[in-house]
Length: 115
Image (cartoon, rainbow, N blue to C red; front, side, top):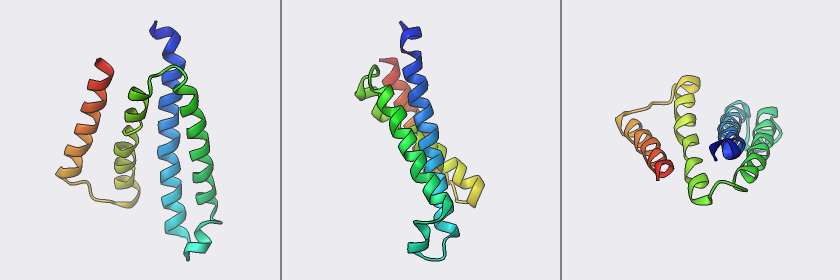
């Protein structure tokens, strides 16, 4: 059974990874741009928006076979991925509260997929 649904989980994880990349691209566009108006024409912002479109497409593929009650909460993995990446890319602080939050997110997703 898992073999038949594996491509849909691959689409879900790919969508999560691309969506997180999109968020990082949007942040890069925001940091580089001199003004809010300029941000919308920055190449990183445009790539970030494109990444969101690609992520949404993969998500749509995933929810064809994965129950929405599992797929949607799993997207929360992107919160932890983005927080960790932002720490390394921009030096954003990850304190114990954020670490605990990320552990709770991961734990909740694991629990959802075990039931």
